[in-house]
Length: 414
Image (cartoon, rainbow, N blue to C red; front, side):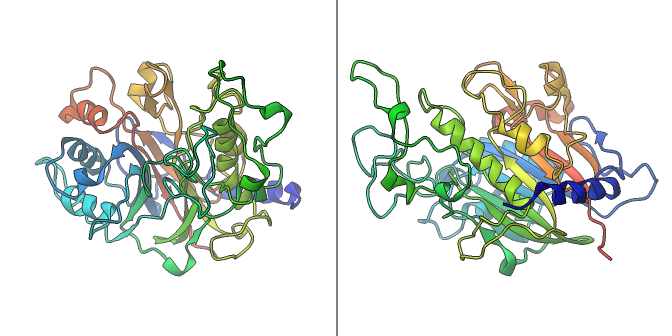
């Protein structure tokens, strides 16, 4: 693996000329385009990540679904240039991809008289490992049956594309330079945390209900790192090319005493930290090796299912702290906030409830590389007593997650 000293030097330089060159603003519920502290409008792109809890095919392929309408109203309030929708299901039995149907049936149509529709010209719905079974049947979830969905697929899912994600953009996508890492094997990550068969993974007695998940030697040869996919999508935005880095790591729960999913989540989050650091072990689905180029600009976006300050036993590894928030390869000096999160004790929170009732957590991200200038950022979460256009009702109806946005300027390279 490459020396980290080289990257620490580069990070320090880029952070000086990029991320700290403009002040990130707390812009309340949504927030408009902001000027830099130098008084000049930058070449900004608005990036947004929204986990719209299980938006199904039948909801988006036709108009009139209340959840899809609420999600579209939230997006139209923000008007992002580049948008990732997590948990937008995929379906091979439709003529139109679900992201295209969502754009056509909801996002492009004003969902309220004072809102504007958004005509995203460029869309991409990557293939997902969820619900995809290997050619040979394996008992990945150790329940005594082989090859059955959802537990024996590469990613937990009832069908291929379950819990997938999709991207919509106003800016062109450089399709020839897209890199997907869906088939990268977990065992090929140096220093991985895979629980493997052995003394610490002996199956419990039959009267003990505890689950113990692990991989056998044979399973190590096929098991993939990405529970959905990891993908690098270059966008031709104002000022140059920015690589959008998208993933949706498995939730670090539902896995038993040896924290299988927690360790899986840890390494899924780690992957993009290694990718932007240029680590050599990485290979993509086309067989091209290596990480991102040293001079590339990038924005990591989406639900990482990992957040700081989660002291519960279910999430002890805290990969977001190590690989995202304390990593100088991402600009994190100022994070998106909201009035709604602040009222619940965590201004940077992006999710409410979930597996632990009443808990708020920060697990959705829009994080730029240190050479880019963060002008403003926000989480769309009104305060409890806010009445502005019923936005609070919309965000609750759309999802238990809240949309995260950031206005980021790209500087021309000389």
